[in-house]
Image (cartoon, rainbow, N blue to C red; front, top):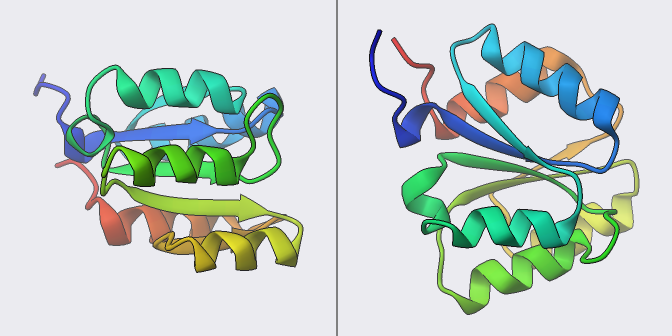
Length: 129
Protein backbone atom coordinates (compact mmCIF):
# COMPACT_ATOMS: atom_id res chain seq x y z
CA UNK A 1 0.00 0.00 0.00
CA UNK A 2 1.44 3.39 -0.96
CA UNK A 3 1.90 6.06 1.70
CA UNK A 4 -0.65 8.82 2.05
CA UNK A 5 0.70 11.92 0.36
CA UNK A 6 -0.45 15.50 0.43
CA UNK A 7 -1.78 15.04 -3.09
CA UNK A 8 -4.23 12.46 -1.83
CA UNK A 9 -5.49 14.38 1.26
CA UNK A 10 -8.62 16.49 1.36
CA UNK A 11 -9.96 18.41 4.36
CA UNK A 12 -13.76 18.72 4.44
CA UNK A 13 -15.04 21.51 6.69
CA UNK A 14 -18.81 21.39 7.19
CA UNK A 15 -21.01 21.43 10.29
CA UNK A 16 -23.51 18.99 8.81
CA UNK A 17 -22.14 15.52 9.61
CA UNK A 18 -24.26 13.66 7.01
CA UNK A 19 -22.81 16.00 4.34
CA UNK A 20 -19.27 15.34 5.58
CA UNK A 21 -19.88 11.58 5.51
CA UNK A 22 -21.41 11.81 2.02
CA UNK A 23 -18.44 13.77 0.63
CA UNK A 24 -15.90 11.57 2.42
CA UNK A 25 -17.44 8.38 1.03
CA UNK A 26 -17.47 9.80 -2.48
CA UNK A 27 -13.88 11.04 -2.38
CA UNK A 28 -12.62 7.86 -0.71
CA UNK A 29 -14.07 5.88 -3.61
CA UNK A 30 -11.76 7.94 -5.85
CA UNK A 31 -8.73 7.14 -3.69
CA UNK A 32 -8.55 10.28 -1.55
CA UNK A 33 -7.95 10.32 2.19
CA UNK A 34 -10.44 12.63 3.82
CA UNK A 35 -10.11 14.42 7.14
CA UNK A 36 -12.92 16.53 8.52
CA UNK A 37 -13.68 19.47 10.77
CA UNK A 38 -17.18 20.32 11.96
CA UNK A 39 -16.59 24.00 12.73
CA UNK A 40 -14.20 26.79 11.85
CA UNK A 41 -12.18 26.55 15.05
CA UNK A 42 -11.50 22.86 14.49
CA UNK A 43 -10.58 23.60 10.88
CA UNK A 44 -8.03 26.22 11.91
CA UNK A 45 -6.53 23.80 14.44
CA UNK A 46 -6.13 21.10 11.76
CA UNK A 47 -4.81 23.57 9.21
CA UNK A 48 -2.22 24.82 11.69
CA UNK A 49 -1.16 21.31 12.76
CA UNK A 50 1.18 21.25 9.78
CA UNK A 51 1.11 23.98 7.19
CA UNK A 52 -2.11 23.34 5.28
CA UNK A 53 -0.52 23.48 1.82
CA UNK A 54 2.00 20.86 2.93
CA UNK A 55 -0.63 18.62 4.50
CA UNK A 56 -3.65 18.95 2.19
CA UNK A 57 -4.09 19.32 -1.53
CA UNK A 58 -7.62 20.72 -1.21
CA UNK A 59 -9.85 22.17 1.49
CA UNK A 60 -13.61 21.92 0.89
CA UNK A 61 -14.93 24.77 3.04
CA UNK A 62 -18.56 25.39 3.90
CA UNK A 63 -19.04 29.12 4.37
CA UNK A 64 -21.68 28.89 7.12
CA UNK A 65 -19.97 27.36 10.15
CA UNK A 66 -20.34 27.67 13.91
CA UNK A 67 -17.69 29.41 16.03
CA UNK A 68 -15.57 30.72 13.12
CA UNK A 69 -17.30 31.05 9.75
CA UNK A 70 -15.78 30.26 6.38
CA UNK A 71 -14.53 33.82 5.87
CA UNK A 72 -12.81 33.61 9.25
CA UNK A 73 -11.01 30.44 8.12
CA UNK A 74 -10.03 32.17 4.87
CA UNK A 75 -8.75 35.21 6.81
CA UNK A 76 -6.63 32.89 8.93
CA UNK A 77 -5.16 31.14 5.89
CA UNK A 78 -4.34 34.51 4.33
CA UNK A 79 -2.77 35.80 7.56
CA UNK A 80 -0.42 32.83 7.79
CA UNK A 81 0.33 33.00 4.07
CA UNK A 82 -0.87 29.51 3.25
CA UNK A 83 -1.63 28.81 -0.41
CA UNK A 84 -3.68 25.64 -0.06
CA UNK A 85 -6.40 25.26 -2.69
CA UNK A 86 -9.79 26.11 -1.17
CA UNK A 87 -13.15 25.24 -2.70
CA UNK A 88 -15.90 27.25 -0.98
CA UNK A 89 -19.32 25.61 -0.62
CA UNK A 90 -22.63 27.28 0.20
CA UNK A 91 -26.26 27.48 -0.81
CA UNK A 92 -26.01 31.27 -0.46
CA UNK A 93 -24.70 33.12 -3.54
CA UNK A 94 -23.61 36.08 -1.39
CA UNK A 95 -21.36 33.79 0.68
CA UNK A 96 -19.84 32.34 -2.47
CA UNK A 97 -19.27 35.83 -3.91
CA UNK A 98 -17.55 36.88 -0.68
CA UNK A 99 -15.35 33.77 -0.83
CA UNK A 100 -14.44 34.55 -4.45
CA UNK A 101 -13.54 38.09 -3.48
CA UNK A 102 -11.29 36.56 -0.83
CA UNK A 103 -9.50 34.55 -3.50
CA UNK A 104 -10.72 30.97 -3.18
CA UNK A 105 -9.79 28.76 -6.13
CA UNK A 106 -13.33 27.51 -6.79
CA UNK A 107 -16.89 27.77 -5.54
CA UNK A 108 -19.54 25.09 -5.40
CA UNK A 109 -23.19 25.92 -4.87
CA UNK A 110 -25.17 23.56 -2.63
CA UNK A 111 -26.87 21.32 -3.44
CA UNK A 112 -24.26 20.11 -5.88
CA UNK A 113 -23.76 17.18 -8.19
CA UNK A 114 -21.14 14.70 -6.97
CA UNK A 115 -19.53 14.63 -10.40
CA UNK A 116 -18.96 18.41 -10.13
CA UNK A 117 -17.41 18.01 -6.69
CA UNK A 118 -15.04 15.28 -7.87
CA UNK A 119 -14.10 17.28 -10.98
CA UNK A 120 -13.18 20.32 -8.86
CA UNK A 121 -11.12 18.27 -6.40
CA UNK A 122 -9.34 16.49 -9.26
CA UNK A 123 -8.55 19.85 -10.88
CA UNK A 124 -6.39 20.69 -7.86
CA UNK A 125 -5.36 17.19 -6.80
CA UNK A 126 -5.16 14.47 -9.42
CA UNK A 127 -6.53 11.21 -8.03
CA UNK A 128 -3.96 8.94 -6.42
CA UNK A 129 -2.78 6.11 -8.60
